[in-house]
Length: 268
Image 1 (cartoon, one colour):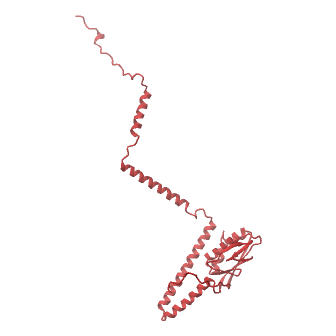
Image 2 (image 1 turned 60 degrees about the horizontal axis):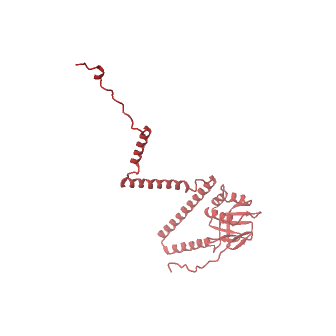
Image 3 (image 1 turned 120 degrees about the vertical axis):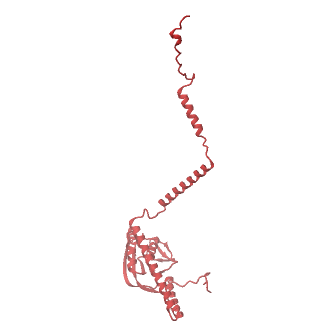
């Protein structure tokens, strides 16, 4: 027998795998990405997941709106320091007046409860209340401490809106009775520009504009002189404004009592 050669006993070497013909590695990688994309889209979302996502969206939208509202709605955020001081003074004054009114009402209640003759006490309080309402309505004259404000407008720059602002400032400071150039100011009074001047309730007034104001002088004068207040505003219009305190201011211009056409007392 012929012995086998060494080459015949050696096992054949393995052949390395070959890539399919015509297929590039980049193409295989691209195909994998495509399969991943196909697995993610379209998303397979359950009903519970959809509801949770919707609730989170609504919650986020509500928080965003609330934050924006809080940022934009504060009118005091961009106010000047003098405006903040004026607003704080007005609030302090109104609070004090409300506390005083509350104390007066409580005193009246105690007097009615403790008086031996409640009918006489009630009659006295009714007369006093009628007098107070007459002052507010302008049907009776009034006197008391207060201030006199005189506005001289040489160039005619002060119009009705400036006088109205002055009136509102005085009311906010606690003015109880006001008269301007012989015209009694009441709740229904109005200002208008007329013929190069100013009219109150249809009656034209000429300068200097003189305010007679009954109230606490210690509250009225500072309210006009605060930074950014009435005096500075009038001075910007090149007008001159002077304030004088007085222990006795007389407001004697009267308004006729107006009978209501439709309103009647509910007790009648």
